[in-house]
Length: 217
Ligand code: TIU
Image 1 (cartoon, rainbow, N blue to C red):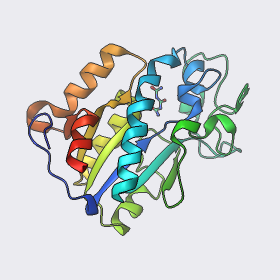
Image 2: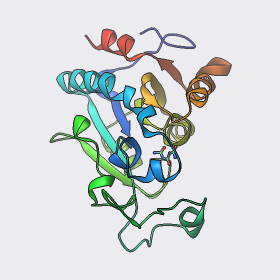
Image 3: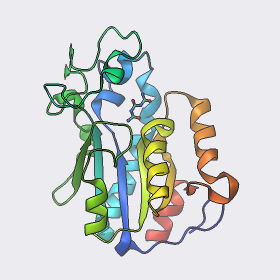
Image 4: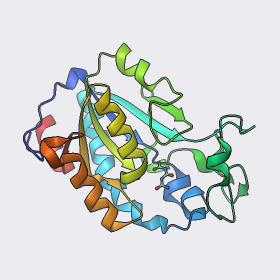
């Protein structure tokens, strides 16, 4: 398929769609993203194209893995450095309008209704920005024989980048879907996508979802 910096080749049998952190905590008011001072409406343009990608990938039978950033209710997996960073009015573990901020099992920490996982899909809870650290993500990929990742989700320069960089070091071929990843900062969105594909694809490939859908069809 067409992609930047050059064509991307994948086998659906060894490719997983990875949907990163499409949680109420990042996309809806009253959650972690807003508590950090962000305009959460910036991320909503990703939802519609990602719904189309999920539908196509489900029809084609690809492995689908969703991730959720979050912490245990007793905060035992939350480094003090992460808890105390910044000057947010609501911190991780505090009670917000959608439950405790970024805590596993809370309404706000779950995936938005529009992109709810279906039976047979993996949901990986992660305490960090990357999907590999302190999770079974790498084990699931190995178990399923996955070698290529098609990556979507939020935010482009934080959890998407951390995951793609770590996946690249582990030998995975990563394609980032440019309209299915979102940032609170338009300038970061543009530059983060350029960073992936620059230098001959230093971390992977970038393409709009339409090109991926065309290749799947
Ligand atoms: N703050 C921000 O841009 N992102 C995060 O904290 N987590 C994810 O990107 N999921």
